[in-house]
Figure 1 (cartoon, helix red, strand yellow):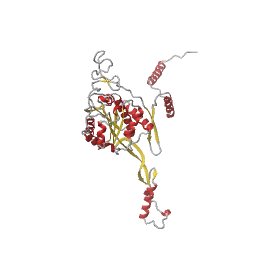
Figure 2 (cartoon, helix red, strand yellow):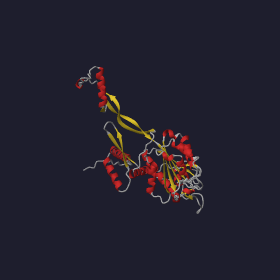
Figure 3 (cartoon, rainbow, N blue to C red):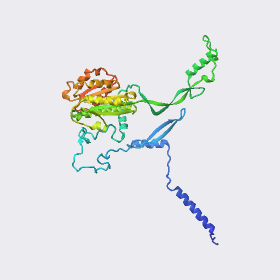
Figure 4 (tube, rainbow, N blue to C red):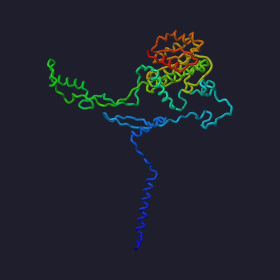
Length: 419
């Protein structure tokens, strides 16, 4: 049998075929392989993830796409990256740990009331105002909101009565609230009947003494329907001022109890106002200043006390920023009751606050030795008649030594009670 010899055209044809195969292979190279799973399979896998001790990742969003039709849209949430542990200091902007100024053994900060290091002789790291930590929410708001829900359910904390100041949000709801004649999603029987009666009265077809509904004429436009409408959601928003004495007499247990109560109150407010809460933090000794949340929870100082300085600072902020116009305003204070003022300055400032605030709540944390007598603060609060304004002002007196979580919860209940 003779072997067939390949011609030049056969060789060129084989080369072209090989070139096309290589071209297709290169085009497919690097393409990702996609595994398509159903929503039920994804949700089932996420439930197993939760059973294994991890947080769920899949959130199901719902979009209204017409009457009775809802589209479910899954999306995946990733954990936030927390930072701050190795943030660059003012002295060293490189951010590399262990590269700052100073030698081994040098004192670089003072002890805060909670055992954390804070630079500066008064426990602060600078004079910057609130919100200067530069790290965003760091998941704090989400955790506080979760705590607020748990507190509200576990301890049956009351709901708020705000003053109805609401702002439009970026949220929308779809509801059958608009009316349309002739066609629509849902017949409004009451409105339709009124329209039919009016039409028949105009035509002279109704005898009030002998009403026969079978003889009523129904015009095309007499039928009134409810139609789906897109409505912007309006919500109440709040500003809460947390005020505490950070003088030497408040060092240690009184401060821990005060800030613990304020954290609970903030968490509760987040639930009440669906996270539309702006916290502002004021500390004072003889002078008051607004600080960041980190400094509020850690700062301590020595020296005397002038509570009225804190009230003045709050009034300056509210008036200067016109907050009372758009916000529900709350003020919660922690003090041991010691004050260099006899009420001459504090009483007028407190009256200003009560003119716009929804609630002022003061936790007085006294040393057990002074529990049987009134402090300066208690004396002028009673003198000013503030205790009679229970809908606006609440005061809770407790010991500052050996405070338990249950005692802090009871204090919070007393400060936010609505009855």
